[in-house]
Length: 91
Image (cartoon, rainbow, N blue to C red; front, side, top):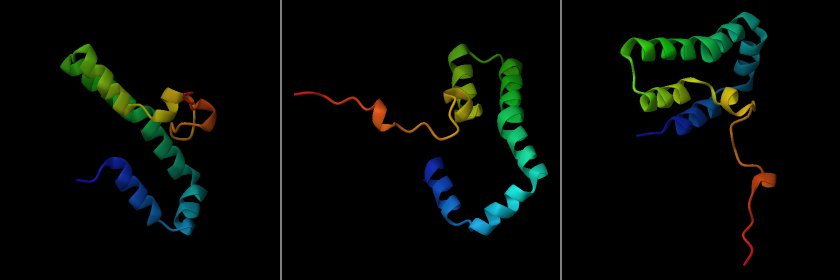
């Protein structure tokens, strides 16, 4: 079973740059995608959690999965460790 990041990398490597450029030229499509990822999916998650009266720990897990990572970290890039964040152990 493939994990989601592996699937995303595989799909991303199979897409031509011209395909990405053509999608980016269509601002209407980009706006719809951004709205769905940043507004619609988290709103649906909140509504479902309220509808089913989920326990706090379950609700936290679903919200962490529904909210885009860039909103949680304040970065547009994935949360990868930077060299400045590394802790070097001294012997």
